[in-house]
Each structure stands twice: as C-alpha cells, then as structure tokens.
Length: 573
Image (tube, rainbow, N blue to C red):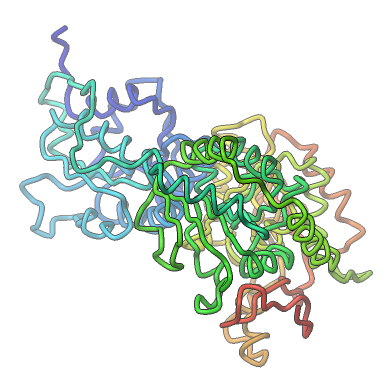
C-alpha cells in the first residue's frame, strides 16, 4: 500500500494506532495544521479546555481513573509553558501522559521567534523523557516510543516537540509504525531477583509485628487483588499512603487506615512498633516518615519498587527488591506457600491486640456543634449519598485530607488527587477527565474556596461537553491548611491566609449555565446533597459554608517520630 500522509496526518494516524480516544488541548499558530487534521477525522475526540494547565490535569485525571495514557496538545511558547505545572504534577505521582507541544519552524529555533520557548529544556527535570521531532517520517516511531516510555516501568509524562514545518500539510511521507520497539538503554526490571525474594519471604514469615505499607505503585500496577490476597494469606495489618488509598478496600478488616502526617493513630503506631515492614510501591515520602532519624528504628524494611532509584533513597532498605509489583507479589505469594517457615500466630494475635487498642481511641472522632457545619460531616454525608461508589477528586489542603480520612475508598482508581506536588487547581479539571472516561458514573470534586478559583474557568468547558460533575466546595473563607499551620506554629498570626473577598459561587456557577446550591447550616446539608445528586443533566456546585476554625487531626508533631501526633487541639497521642 503506497498511501502517503503529511506530518499532521502522521500524528493523527499514529495516535489512532496507539488507541488514543481523547486529546485535551488548546489551539495556537504552531499546531493549526494538526488541528486541521483532527477536524478531518472522527475517531479521536478533542476536548477544548480554557487553559492549558487544565488540559494536563484533565489528561492526568483521565489516566488515573482508566490506567490509560493521557494526551495533551498545546501550541508553542505560552501554550507549552502553561502545561508545566500539570506535567510536574503527573511526574511527581508517576502518571503516564504524552504532551504534544508545538514549536516554531526548525529554521527559527534559537532565534527568539514569536511564541518560541525551549519546552524540552523547561520541562527536562519533570519528565521521564523528551523527544525533539525534526523529521516528519519519524513521527510514528517517536510517538510509539513516547507512549511506551510513559506507561512502562515507573510511569511518567513524556514531552514530544513538533516544529511547525514538521507538520507541513504540503509534504507527504509513507507511514511506518514500528512492529517492535528497540530501546537498548531502557529495560525496566519486571521480575524480582530470586535470592532477594527468598530473603523477603523469610523476613515476612519470621516477623512478630509485620506491617504491609502500600503506596501508589499498587494502583498504577493494577495489583489490588493480589495485594488483598497477600494481606489475607498473612493476616497482616495494612496501611496505605495518600496515593495508595483504594489499593485495598477501606472497609477491609485488616486495613488500619492511612499513615503519615494526617494518618490514623493505629497506622502510625503500628509502623513505629513494627519489627518488619513490607513496603510495596511506596517511596517513604517525607509526609509519611516525619523525622527520618526517628523512623521505625526497630523494623527490618523490605522495599519493593519498579524504580531502583526509589529504593533506599530516603530510608535504608534491609532487603531491596526491584521489579514490577504484579510479578513480585506473585513471587512472594508463591514463596510464602512453599516455605517451611510458619507464622507465629500467638505473636500475631498479640500484635493485633495492640492494634485493636490503638483503634479503640477512635482518632477520627470529632466534636460537633449545633450551629456549625463541620467539614468531616460533609464528607461522611457525601459517602452516604453516593454509597461509597463515586470517583472523588480533590484539590490540595484541608478538604483533601478530610476526603482521604472520611471517605473509605472501596476500589483502586477511585481516589484521584495531587499527592506529590500538591497542586491547587487540580481537582476540577481532573474530575472532568474522569467524567470524560466514565460519563454515567458519579464524579465528585472535593475542593475549597481557594483551590477552586485556580481553574474555575473550566466550568465553561464542562458546559460545552456536558461534563456533569458535582463540585463540593468546603468553603471556610480561608486557605485552611495554611491557616492551620499558622495557628499551630506561628501563634495564630494569619498572614495572607484569609480570603477577604470571595465571589458568590452560586451565582458564578449559574452564570456558567450550571446549578448552584449554598449550604449554611447543618440542617440543610442532607436536602442539599440529595438535590445535587438527583440532578443528572447539569453540573452542580455545592457551596458549603463550614466551620472555619476546624483543624485536620490527627497530625504528626513536626520533627517527631512517625507516631508522635496531635489527636486534637492541645491533645497529644
């Protein structure tokens, strides 16, 4: 077959062959030829955002919910640089994304041409890899490699720069998509080393106080079922990181809650007192460890990760295992079944008794007031109304922590938030990306009055594409987490943390063509939630006025050990 294609058509055909269904983007001069090629086909839907940062967050949310690689298209210069925050967000949380960026014509690169920016250079520290495409005939091969790199090993964003002349509609080429990829310098490990697996199994079975600590890698590698099987086989307590929530059902009897800065007392206490910690797809982030010099001093650490650079980076692993979690957990399960070592069940029973004692303190209890609506109550009501089945995205701050603590996630890919970078403005576009993927499911963005304003223009995109998400804004008239830290560490000096001028969010939502509902009193919450979820043909914005003095607890004490915590204002664990 001798059919030929121009550069823009090569991009579109390659994307089709790579099973791309949606592109999130915003047009501009350097990519108009590509937009014209998109116009001529119907297999790939382009979603027109109102800001390129939102395009990256939409692609990110789409990817987190589906496991597929999200695709972004932006023009050169400011279009590309507007993607930087979203690229960094995906990079920190290991989310597969391919960003197609326009560029000025090749002969003008380096001349400070109109809307020229070195996007490859700008994004280099926050991408898994970058490609400068200089020849149109290389487009299928480059895109094939970009998608493979983005989704394999430890996933991450890949930038592909496309100069305007490479997309020239006047010059045509043969289409050659490689049948097999050859990347000699990139061969991610999949199977754990046999000797290391044997050491890991021996340590796990010999433990008297074992804790399984799982992170976002469990979600990304689709190993939730195998993780649950391992937990039940060992009858071990398991804790999740913020990124790992949903890796095991939040209602599972062995789940002891999230760990870390705002983790449960029982999770942090169990970690601090463990003799063996099996870390699966987690990177010992500072929001987990607190003071690394005091971190779990009596524990032997078995650390499993597909990325060798993540192992022993922060906390020294006694038994490192490099490999894909799907394969390694299968190896561990097999090793446990074949081992001659038996679990000390009496020691395990005593260990569970300790954990039950910590659980009994009910660290997530909170004081209610007749006339003040507590943010915890809102999340509990949200869980009740949705039967725990909604996809929940969040922005960053107190509302994020309340959602993580009070909405027990039943399954993986249900909880979608910016964990590593902590990006305000992520929640709404991420929810939109999820809604694109699952238009019939409940998708809720839990946000705050500060975060929602960072990408609120995307309410316009929601109307255009019928993305009927539910926005639950915990409005405390302030940057709540900033204010909380100022209360606790700065003597209550609220420097630039109060929002002294806020819009009427109900009127604003209605001006975009959506439904706005305001909730001022606890007695109004149930009816408002019921009404919001009964409306299925339009976006609903719930402006919920919560108690602005409320803090997120538990909370680790700065510079302390993992289990040194505030349980309430003035009350230490």
